[in-house]
Image (cartoon, rainbow, N blue to C red; front, side, top):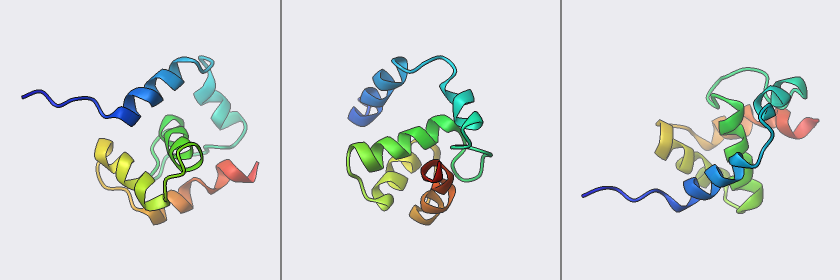
Length: 88
């Protein structure tokens, strides 16, 4: 039996399609994302921000959604790694 795509994943993919082509480079330029740690890319950071701010998920739920896609990610790692995105 084929697994159905996750509802949140498909909405996020549609959202990303509307972004400028250089959105990942802009994340580096504006220092929203400086280096990969537990959060591995500007795309993953954006997904976490959209889950937390856009869908009002808790940090633990955000970490769970991303962990579903990539493996383990704790809410503490989310809180620590995405701090620069909110300082600008």
